[in-house]
Image 1: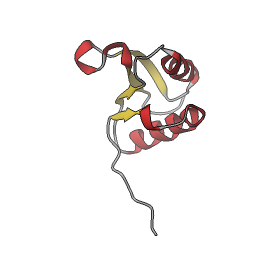
Image 2: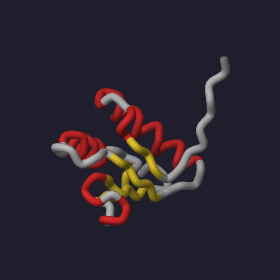
Image 3: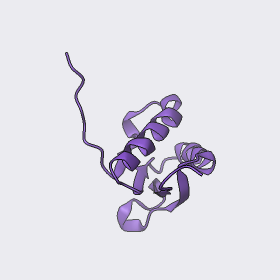
Image 4: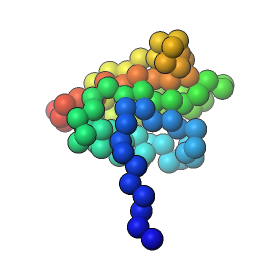
Length: 91
């Protein structure tokens, strides 16, 4: 069987992924977004106890492709999602 190709979009919902897979997943996702010309993305990590959000923000602070990030507005997930602006290229 050939792998199923899913088109890259500006939203990534982390609910179906294991926490240990998130660091590599985010890096791969950001690279593919830039290849597709997408520089603004929304990462949905959920509200819960905030554990996954803290993990995501820790990764974003150190990731070389991330220019900035902030909580999403209420109509885009509020504190259950993070808006990420990507760099056009590595510095």
